[in-house]
Length: 410
Image (tube, rainbow, N blue to C red; front, side, top):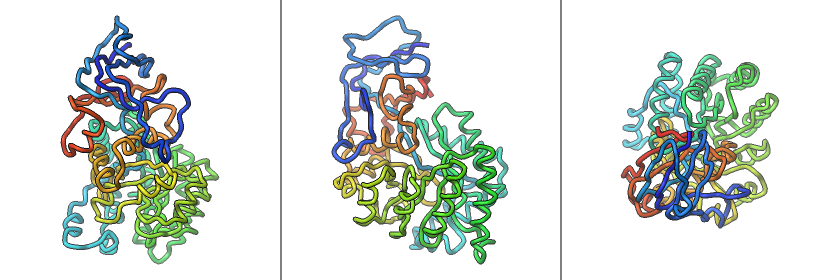
């Protein structure tokens, strides 16, 4: 099957030759080609160029006159497998309760865990499939999905099996993360060591046996899991060949960044509370800082210091944190606007953070995240808009005309 996208006003996000994770000033570099075409063969980008060299005799032709074509978004941190929404907690938040207050009152993660326990795998799958289809229409072409609302062997395995079913169903690239260490279940509050042993001695062996997880995550934060507990869990996962991606420094300067780096974490995610020590530690590592501005917006906490991090020489990734309690949205175009308005990223920096850098945060950089010959044809075709900046500028408007995944219109 040969598909031609022709008359493209501007192809955005081209990477030719050797590619790297974008850091510092390079995060602002976005290669473009005006008045171009893209040729797709067997799910992959086989060629692109100027319309003066456009080929013919195609099986399918898409006319992209007045449109931009971008690589599909790469969302490297989500929790889209959950049983019920938590709009009651939204009302509690409006009335002044903090994220910690809601959790202490029996809401938050533990509330989601109670609901999920009674939800069948089939029902959980159908709900998650709907969310996955929704974010695909927002332009997402690769996604990481975490467990963490199970908090028991049976429920965590149930969630991870749902993620595996989603991966078999959907053409978009999906990575699976085990997050059994998301919170201490109520029944283990006075015997947390027993729960940590359950994760290490029961959950991880089962998950490794069924090959259910690409990564292991821990919520390393005051009131959740300590640095020492995090270190133990990550080291146990490493024995099964499961690398870490961890929740770090969301509510406090917890030491999570350093323990993530010490365990060679692929990424440390959140980072709303950061000091110079943490930035310097990241500069000396290969660990990717992933920022989640939708969470800051929704629960009204500070935004991660993205500008300071970039100016220090770091790269960043942006992700939605789509979940029912602290970021109930998988809308990356809105995320771009938040990143620009609240974190002072340029549109180019925000774009790279949710495309090529997002791909690196899922170890998918050879498959997605840019317009590159040989990569999967996961593409966004916009409506008639003037430029990339218009997407975060004109927030709340749907600028996407078509989404292609593996060369097929979704």
